[in-house]
Amino acid sequence: MRLEQLFEQLNHFMSGSTVSDHRAVISVLLDILMIFSRNNLKSELLKELDRHSKTLNLISNSQGVDSDKLNQILSNLKAISKKLYDTNGKIGSKVMESDLFQSISQRSSIPGGSCSFDLPAFHYWLEQDKETQQLDLLQWTEPLDNIREAIELILSFIRQSSLPTQELATSGFFQLSLDKSQPFQLIRVATDPTLPLFAEISGGKHRFTIRFMAPSSGIVRPYQITENVPFSLTCCIF
Image (cartoon, rainbow, N blue to C red; front, top):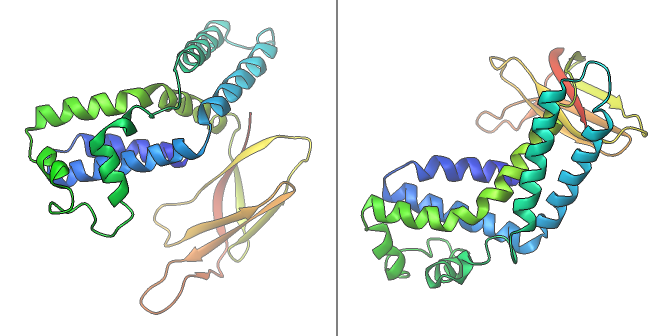
């Protein structure tokens, strides 16, 4: 989900044309590459894709299943898995071989460390025409396309795996015990967007709690509201 958010930011800033947009693109791309360098995401995603394929194959002969749609989904899973299998080495490792990216990465931990006098090569790139920059950005981000596609597909399966229920948080508090035999993967909470509150969710394997909090204003810290809050809850299993 962190990568999903970063990819959304990457898309947003890549469509921009200002120096600030391109600085943001590089910053987000470095965050993505940092996650890839610390985790074997390729292996984890392949396992997840394989698990989803097996689960869908088990229900292929069930009554009421749209066979054409299911076959299309299975074909999608197979194609994405093959793309990941065919990817050599660590995802994004070739991008970090760039001298420009290495120098930016080394300075990124320093506040304001990417100023023009610190990284003249980066400053030069930021001053290039938009077409040149877009070609570079597409070349740097293309190796991430397969893993991004896999993440989007897996998360869409999980989010659509269950139907929402309507619940009520008494005095802003809600708690629910989980069925240990069910592989819950995600909790989704939705409220009326006009309500001045946000949800804090905490939990483990056996139960989870939701506290609806009033946002801070001035010196007052966020606090749990005392009113009852109707909300939509989806406990996703796939």
